[in-house]
Image (cartoon, rainbow, N blue to C red; front, side, top):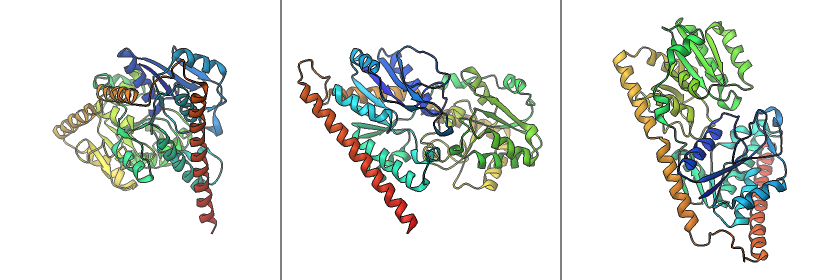
Length: 426
């Protein structure tokens, strides 16, 4: 099967979406399928086989993201040679629109993965935040209804989409992980490299350090816990615009000397970083799965998190960590204290529960489920590669219908946004 994946973001960015695209592509290729990834150019990128980079504006509005420019003819030529059997879109806008047009041109199914609560990222855009949130919600909902099948990383996000009006066929398919990779790590040597005492109680977080990850709250809670516990240390992996604010919070609390930044960690360093922790901390409200939470559990690390879509399916309170019903700093600190005070035998039980949870998110399960859906979609009536003898008018007709669907979706979203703005001013 020839699988075309289209995404607005990819390596070297290290978020959950980028990991998902890379991981699934690797798994599909291991099963003999050819996968081509289309994504915008970005700083620090490396040339990679079967990854097509399209021109883009870099660092849009101060973010790490690139904004795709019009598709060059070289891409059209590459796709004509590739002849995709299925298109998998990972965003509902920009390159996502192109994915719809490509699916229309080749008369093949379009699958869309709803990776993100897109409305939680509108701070990167200029304009009124509430009206932009309404616009993005409507746009992603409408896009999902233009797709032939929609994947959601968690049950709670799929239910949210249904409530918002998504009617396409859909399925929960989390981004799987290779649990064997995370099972063993050199936590002690990683601590030594960062000058963290061997007997310290280490709380940690790994991910993109940006405001939508709710890091200000997380750092305030972590700082208070460190202040209350002289042997506690904080390990942070990742980079992003929030790093300075995070340092500022711990400086003001007087515990900056126990903050350890590891920078971007990947490969074996990522595994070792998890194994250097006693507890993983997480407070983002913008996730649909929280891949790092599952990775931490695969390493046997209990998690303290705030309840959110995609997180409640993973963290089970007092079984594999602590799940807080609301965002409250005192409650978060108390939950960390609860784990720290657990006797060793109960810690062992909790670590075992973490690994058992991670097994239910194995990549093998997710990969096989996606490939089965791809196959079923490809053999459905009405889908086949464009035959060579097909009239140009048939192809043009499909493209016009697709373009009209995109225009209607954009217009409907814009009207909803304007209505939201009017309601605020009245």
